[in-house]
Length: 343
Image (cartoon, rainbow, N blue to C red; front, side):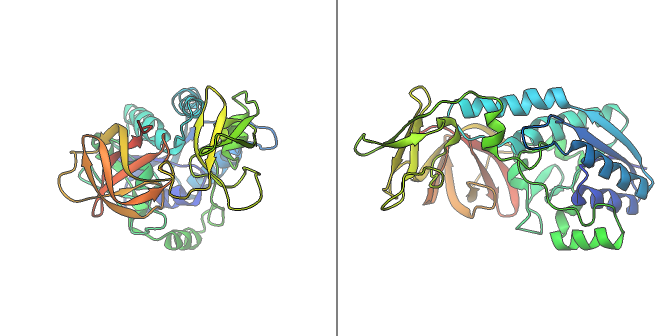
């Protein structure tokens, strides 16, 4: 019998994942990954409640349950990376790094060493022969966050929810009377809880006010509370008032300046060529027609790739250094790269 260790977060998706695998005849062990337990001002980390919920579901299903403590590795590999990227003026995606370094590397390696044959998670994605494919539920598809996982890891991974709609998963949880059937979606920073990025970063970086400068005139038009908090294309939170809205089109971290413009056609706001860094392919580099997704749930755009420069068939708004661009060929997620600063 195939032994599968299921990453159980205490949410409905991973609970149904475990239930389906039990019903399909696998030897299932539930694993809670303890990645973060630090409370933040005004926000209690939900890890203890999540752990308790995961345990309750494991008891309901009659499966073994373990806790893997990855807190040090998560802090170093995910949180420190994220803070460093923001300090350099980029906008990273911690969920992508968590999948790359923790769930589909550290968790996989630890599970295999502990006697597992495979791992499983509640991601909405499909895997076949070490290749990654979009989920049936396009609205919940999570391949954007999984593009840096290796083919070797995917060959040892099961995604039972890939062929279901979210509503169907909710119904399956209710039918099985799972403890987490009514639990709401978790938002915010991966594993940390319902806390916004600004609030989270404020605990780890020292910021100071600086000038907001109109790009075209060089004129100071306002003050910001820390350049680290602003990202390309941002309109809200500038508090500049009056007339046409301003958009963030750049920033200088050394000078602690944020640059804005009212010109929606500014080259930093609308771009069709995107230089990529740290490119990763799940199997092979693309050959032929490709589509690119600039952000999670963003539309798929026809594109061409040449020497790690992506040429989009249409200009896209607010393509920001540090973000990920994920490449597809039809249903298959091929990989992608991280937006590099424009020269």
